[in-house]
Image: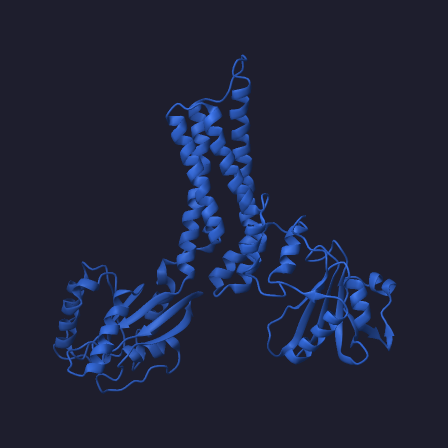
Length: 464
């Protein structure tokens, strides 16, 4: 392994804040000698035989050089039965960051060096404990921001991409073998698959790659924060609705119109997905320049929303109808929420609202923020329909690097089909199949470069 350094590395592997436990990880050929210099039990150093007899068991001992700084649990993992595939030790301290940094200095003093970002996982990959897609999945698990994203990362950690690329590689190798056999034995009296069969095999691989890439793009769009904007005239109950969705008092609620001068935004999770919930200033005609600026911002937020919620006041029929007319061009697919249904004006007519939105694909709700009537049904609808969430079982989450490589596979196969369609000989289009195989090899790490590894492991934290 030309990229593998053989020195011994150390890093804090838990978050840099206070907690019950803080873990330091050590890996490399000098793991055992370094550990023995720093560990003791009953004032005696831990013997090598004792550590070998107690591999992968937690040993309660003292840590320090001349002065002991903590009582810890030490676990020794002999090569190759460790996360990195090397000799490895994990030291569980009390979770004080000052203590952990002091311990780290002692490791440096007796011969370890600071680990680089992702170096433990990089060593696991280079020692063939995991492939490149599994390494990327570990980073995805660490950085997942929602249950949905975590489920996708877990699938990759358990080999979803590896299984897919292995199957694709097998299909293309069989296809290449058939093409090369036809080239080498074209003068022999042998039977090969028909061209239509070959085209169908190529199209099958193309379809799998295309569906994988499309699914990953859908997954990425679901993972990114959806912007849910609450919009409407002043005093319709927008801020009250936001507070009810959040489950706490975030926005100021007042009967005085124009209380919200600027939009308020809060990041939350709905049904496992990250959401940016925005409460906007009430839209009305005003001479107040500050309020006008807030209204312009409100319009901009509404126009760029993924989910649009329009709140109207059932106690003010005239204003509600005027407002619907005002935003008629932008109301398509909006959720129309009629608030204050417990205090409707005498001239309120729900049928008028229905008629207005029936060709806008809008969804209609009647609620009361005061009595909470209709609120559970509305929030349930928002939870279950936000961004038309798909089941994670049907999707694979790809890193940008892998999206690029899957697109290269599609390009190579598309060119292959084009060459076949133009009656090109197998000697020509088999090179495109080779290019597709190279791209597959780069996905799972069968074909590696220092540049690829640098991009992958730079996303990790130090200590992982």
